[in-house]
Image (cartoon, rainbow, N blue to C red):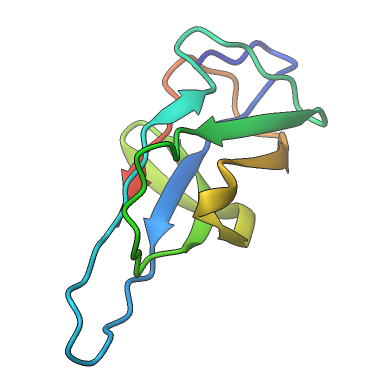
Amino acid sequence: MKFTKFSTFASVLVLGLVSSVSGAALDVFVPPITKPVAGEIWTSGQQQLVTWDVSNAPATITNKVGLVKLRKDDLTTPLILAENFNILDGQIEVTVPLVVEGSDYELLREH
């Protein structure tokens, strides 16, 4: 993702928060991010849609709660853009925050 002087944003989609289920196998689902894509420019203050593909979700998932955070220079920042949403929704709208201009922002999925 690239951000111009007036656009400053990156996000990390954390699909995790795994909880154990007594006696049951744990299925952790890490769907591929479909938006934003490399080279996309986001401007601070805008609403943008982050999407991921849930078409191959297993029947039982233990990590249904999502978290979107900022990532720059291979470091995750403490800024939370969205949290406590169901990852099976396949999308979440975020407000692009004001951050340093750059082209080294990316989406990262953690579990």
